[in-house]
Image 1 (spheres, rainbow, N blue to C red):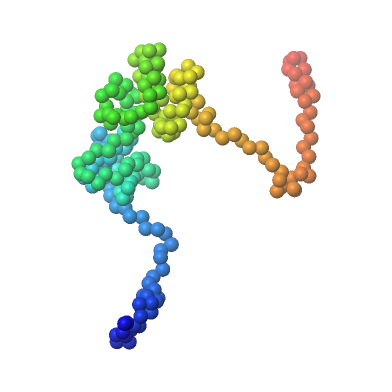
Image 2 (spheres, rainbow, N blue to C red):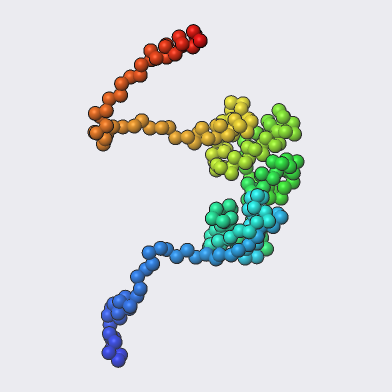
Length: 226
């Protein structure tokens, strides 16, 4: 049986109402649990955070960055631009590489492609290997650099999107990086819809006269007599 103590409500329901009246409103914005730290990318394009290393694009080596360490993700910013994202590593002394961060450097040094540590265990679909062999068979050593250019398309597109573009390129025999790029971004283009007058009745009253194509004949005659 609930009892009153020093004038306080004696029932659980009454106590709950008192507590609710004393509670503050929930904040309008949700709480983002994260740790913010300033760091510097070293010569290997790695940023130290919470005793782990995370890669950034090689263009940001030796630059100051801001690290936002969340529960599931680590974001690395240069100024206000997010330049790298990694799953949060909760162990210690680990290195998280994103192979895409090193492709710009490898394009200048294609001979290091098979020995670059950041690319170890990079599991790519089989069509990538088929494309590389085709390019190197056709172009020799220059084919390796051309293949890296194709890999760099993942800086702007997803692995799924690039895989589809490579498969189509192999099917039609257009294996150069420019061809793959054209296929990739053509596949992602959305068709332009026709403008509808529905909901715009005031536009129906406008009538545009057809152009006078006879003017072109006049210009042609002037050009011929000049």
